[in-house]
Image (cartoon, rainbow, N blue to C red):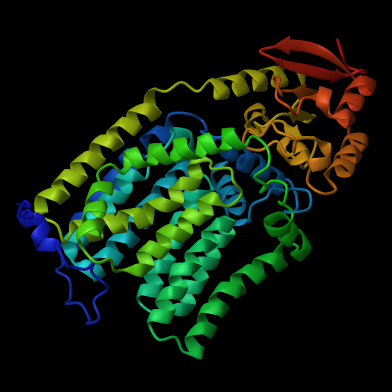
Length: 497
């Protein structure tokens, strides 16, 4: 005889993941937010403690810090200050430096805590409106627990994804309330933080269609989305904005080169995030197995975010942060129709996983940061404060740590060789650089030769021996003065000693 289904399975069989309530919710009791906000704020602070452990966590933070200094010194975005990213985060760094000084990233780390707290609050509001007070609390707490579930370099850095997530959550929050103009603006802000943030338009458009979209609503969404993007393009330079954020990254987005290495990275980061979500995945899978699925916009949000992770075929760990808000909401949706003990188990497991990731962040060594700090010390010793240097590598934080201006608008060798994300295959070299980059670089170095050129390639495939233009510059005008830890410091011939 077949075994009788368990009571818990019978209780949810045939159910549906709940959809948003169609009726206006009863006025919430006053204690809800005053009680919950301090808890969420405390969790946001605790989960971000490792971010304060080091001066910076990733080359992206270093890149943004150097960009901000260049902008403050009169640089022009997408002209003399360039990157493949939209401008909101560079402007955020610039504004923060103007207020608090550019010697520390501490204010940006605090803003990252605020961004995570805001994301959690928006998810609470979405879940609470749909499924009640308990689901709201669960969604906010689960989100903060899983938000650190990656390599600390990816999860703790105050960079693009962390500041993008409140915008994506705000887009869903607004669309859920049929505020289409505001939803479009939130999608635009997500895109202007990082291009892949625009993926949240998919679930927003689905919600618009589900609401019985009329022309006026579509127009509001379109204007809300288009106006901020066009305004930012006009404020910078339309051609430069289009090139650096959309059309100029063809080689970077190619899958060719180190396919196995990149695929392994993608699977590894997916496994790390799955471990952080160990409390969420089982209840979601259980409900999927025994209940009809609903809340299609949440699945579309997760799917579109997964598509954003795949874009470019790099699979960096910080890309996976985009998955966490929708995962938290799906977890809350599944748990609120399961027995209460399942919620306690899920939260406990998530808390334990979070504790492990926090310990990782606090205890793990940072050899690359230590190397960059030693290199910055050598640069400071061998140059005067007003002199410029060129660091040939992928660690732009060296400029910020050394407090020396870069000799070029191209802050990494990746922009000049397409060495991005560890690619060491056939698509690395001068001919794969950003279009027009090498003539610009040669002009910059000829007009104002740097006092030092530091080869920090350390055996990577973008080393000077494989880059003829750089090799000629070094051979004609520079002499090696120091070799240490695989790096070579070159000084101009007129000052080499």
